[in-house]
Length: 207
Image 1 (cartoon, one colour):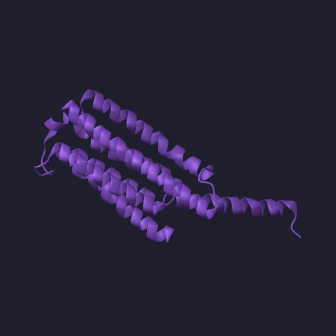
Image 2 (cartoon, one colour):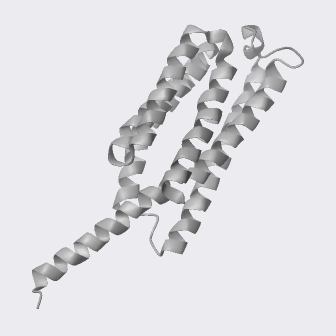
Image 3 (tube, one colour):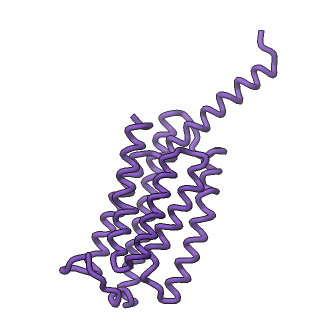
């Protein structure tokens, strides 16, 4: 018969497996796809505010300097963020319930800590840029800090999230080189790449 220590090891192994399963929940492929769709909708609204009826491939920096337009863009960005987080949490909770696991455990807490440090730093930096009127590099900062957060968090999750992080940083640097095309890079980084990442995660881990 097994002694108490062996039973404790078995229980610890089961607990570890349960915590690892949350990685699949927290990084739901479907939530990534939906977040990407939200971002593309937001990019479309931003295009209507900044460029319509002209092409979005032109540099029109003076429009972004208008306070009313900037407020509308920030509103769109915040709404995209709220809907993305809300949808991700809802899908994660639903999947956790089906698997009989808790969405809030050691693994998810560590993931949240890893994400918050670079995201909060980036958020404060972006607020400083906005207060100083440096609107032209805000998109670049968003992509770069988001990419750093993904790479940092990806150490304890899956390699795919780190690949997404490197892609976001690359797009952010390109956006800094080509500042007149910030909306295009924003749509690519937060929209298209999230959809691609979500599809990969969904077919690899969710099905």
